[in-house]
Image (tube, rainbow, N blue to C red; front, side):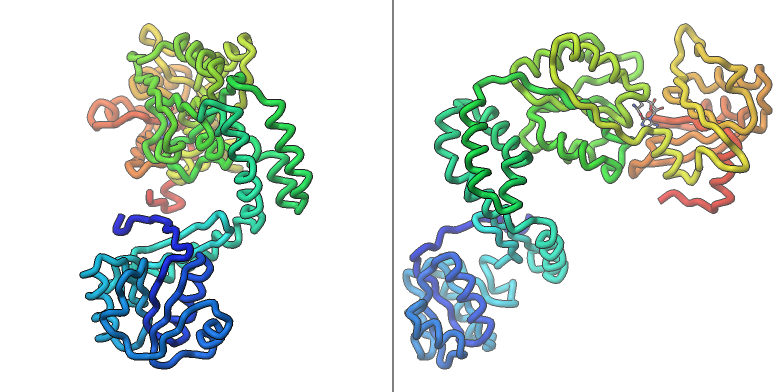
Length: 459
Ligand code: SAH
């Protein structure tokens, strides 16, 4: 961060603007919006500034700038077209430790003015540290169009209830929960549609009816295969709402970056053959946390219901009367194949697709091999890196041809995404001779060839 973003209270504080042109006029208007006491020093002023002075909104001193003008100011803005004068104002301000902004000269500034989205009392400031102001303005335009004006009214309403809510809930988490419900539910909807009085009544009712330490909730969320852009909106919303996040090894760092900043993070591991917290322990932890009134996000790689043991987790929740939601995610088969240029089905090459677990138990996989070893079908093996020689042998034993194309997708959809292509016969050698990192997905089928045909290069 090049600059520290802060919001300063300048109500009735003297702020000096040097210069009387249109740019100075714009800055003055901004300072007035924040209720500053503006003093403008300029030899000549534009119409707008003269008008403001006439209406007693600001004080104009029509004279050349002198060093004594800077004393006891809270902020100084220099907006003249005289670079030497701007530099002089900047030096004097710096000597006196008064924050100074010189329009369009970042080197002379000790503070910069961001692009603003104003939904007062909500104000969003965007800065590119002077490096790309046009980009900052584009971002601003995007935010302008996505944040309804009524957010300001919603914040006003919240402000008028703040003390009451504080008095009702001792605990910060209960307070946060109350507000999050209000801001994403019917109260917000009513404010957005202009029914502020009704929203006020609803908020009062919600406050009167809620009690301390209610039962929490569990969100079983699919975090996708790695690329954070593959998260669903719902996953993101719940990840940012939860007080506690239980995550395991398959959830990528980039996805973890997006959870609520102050959420408690609990790693529950799950490396092959080394379960940091056993499944029963995870199930119980979810129940215990929810019973403490916390909103818990159980974040899983891919989809929670595809080889994710999500079913077992919600079974325990249901038995214990804990409310829950399940959010599907993009499963590894889908993410890894798509990012590798391999369509899982294709009119000409594959009319069905099977997702199977390649987890070895006592050295073998309990799979219906004769159903798998057929043409015109794609098989996706999860958890099969260690069992690759076994699956190669079994498929061939059950009649699959040895030159059937195979792809191994390593760390799919992440920046380290890598694809190795081979054939069924050569698969054991590939796994033995190359360093392949987990997680890895194995795709068997004619569709693997399409990668070359599509001339696919991994991004
Ligand atoms: N619920 C997950 C799967 C969990 S099983 C899902 O829907 O994707 C774990 C296996 O998924 C790994 O052994 C690996 O085979 C596969 N896997 C998960 N993420 C992967 C990734 N980014 N790249 C390759 N394989 C992945």
